Length: 312
Image (tube, rainbow, N blue to C red):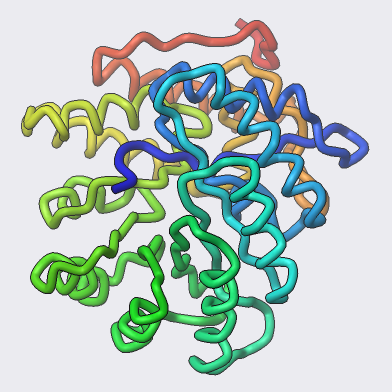
């Protein structure tokens, strides 16, 4: 079972739009150092749909280099593409590089039938020997998984579901069906929202965007949850939900870059057409204050880097 704190980590680019290998590796290392267990590579946060297949493979390789410096860290690359061939190629390359599993959003942009999506996942599952997770993200893929569709995919060997919309009726049915019927099938939530109640439903892994810029908060939340410290787990959950909501004023990838800059770290650039606000924007100071308050509320040390765009 995949367990713990996972990050849908951003991919960092330079001003020309090229992959910034060193900053991307630094960011991975920094998150591992602060308690993140695994990386969900080149998903929505990681600009996967804006990257070539070769660039995404390069990010998998960079992540492997960083993970090898630690013990017990794992990689869960996102391999979903608009076409089946590219998705299968990414899955095969990820397996060669050495990952615990791969995840894939359904083929997006075009409207596809259940049978077409089923065939897409069938070809990915049959192409590799590692577990394959489906990624339920209807906001970006135009496809919403149903319980019946999950059952059909389970028969093909699908290992689990990463779920982002958190429709409680759907996700609870999938999770409890696997438990009651002893299916080797895992639900991973694709957000920190809902972590605490879903933990009590049997979910043991969360892919939390906040790990990009405040891994200490997610690490503390999961530590107290797994330790059974209900009071602190609830307190941390509420703090996490509050500060997370404050960062949802723009696209999550842009917000992650901004939050890293607000903490004094050089987060490079997102890939265009995404653009960062100018560093003179007072929003950076507001973000810094919000994150600092969250840390102080939980008794966590608020550390900053040397790349300070905000005047002391």
